[in-house]
Length: 225
Image (spheres, helix red, strand yellow):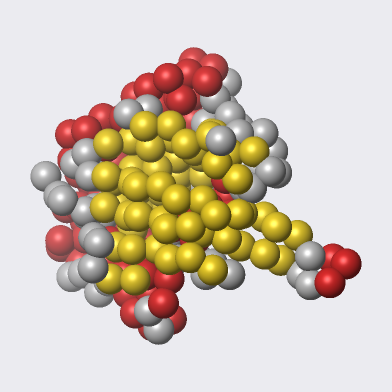
């Protein structure tokens, strides 16, 4: 089990300036601990995606800091170092699945390993293991359009964890799924957080997923309630 953690300290993110200035996030602090699932919830436009983008190094705060393991200020690292952290330590799951249409399920899962220059035999082993873990071993050679929404999201989760990250970030992972399929995805994310000791954070409108979380952060108009 890892001991990773992400900590957001007084995070503020503004967009635009003058009359077009938008305060997307204002003074939000939170901790995402290893082995726990943190749910970020709130209405549309409350700042959920903005917060996850800051925590994952996809964006930088206007003010405040993102700490990695309490020692590295992720939000202030040079872009090359942030990219290295994202590739090595952070797995992402997207609401719209984010799969490459022309690649098979296995090839989509393999992408992070190719970027990490893992040798082919080890890539194949890890991909097979990841697809087995999400229950899609028999669908390895199918392309995204041949899979259901739930299956595509499971491919997305397999891709997110195949390189062995210690942090998992999921933006509305059940947002486009029916309730039964969403429940399956919820179970998988909860299990990954608890069994693998991932520091996991999800944004969600889904009360069932919020109820499964170990910790809940509620946002409204960019501020924490």
